[in-house]
Image (cartoon, rainbow, N blue to C red; front, side):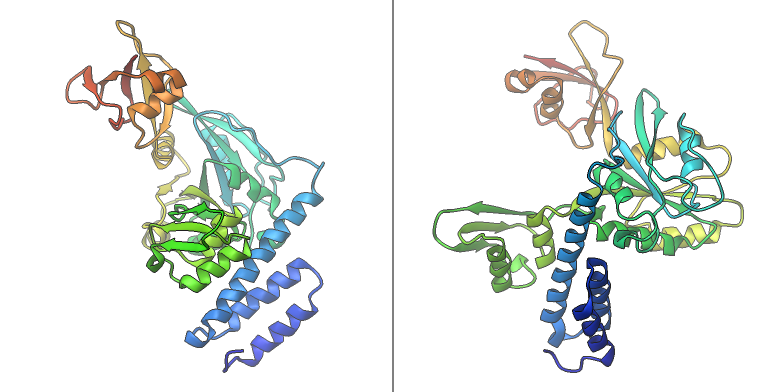
Length: 382
């Protein structure tokens, strides 16, 4: 055991040993991490505690999923071009926002937890619809069962994107901090990409690592993490810096990676300073969309669309008008991606395509790897 551990650490350790429930064990482990000194002598201890915390949280989530089996479902069927979960603390303006942007009519009241089930609504933006889903309020400790518990966060986990609804008239920085940590505690990573690594299992030969210098915890720790999961023979290829926790999350399948942005509500006159603080602290991590009490509906819808990083592509046949309904694709998609969505036979047999919109001249012939832009018109030729 590393030296110089404070008395508070040993008290938390006693709490952990006496704990009977997963919630108590999680709380005690969090206290152990908080009170442990942060220096080289405690690195291994802290890694062990963080791995323990991750496993306890995953076990708690599975336990709660079993307990609610057969009960009311929090699942919301995805409709439209994308599904966006509205996540916020009590009375942050989620219901008002949903009523303003869609035809849904959730209850709006001044008391907390007015919404107790997910409420979907369809937001019309130009020629597509985007599904907004208000989820019940999240509070500090929701991931541990406080308030309405962890179930509402499952909607955010399954959505295409997450809008953090922040009441600027209160403490916006604290709200973002709490919402982000509660989502993180249930395995939802905001505006982060999965670590780039590959594992090719083999029958023999042990564990061979390419790019071991990218693993921040050392080769021995990497092999131990793999062997814990019964991976004893494999080629591991690491393409970017990764920690043991990143690796464990990816191998266990306990984490999802979601695009997220902030909807800053109640942006009244006089709240400019707080909005500025929000942009200063979190502007590099999230796009921030101010929502005033009056006007600006189309601007907010446009900003939500832009935050989703999707594009609309209109297909057409030779000598015919483009389709009225677009194909919706992730930003950065190519001609091949569009052909695959239209029909797999197009993807296999595609000879060339013509593009109107982002090309240098209307109807320009482009290769399969041509990157499309929003509102491009595409003519596919087999």
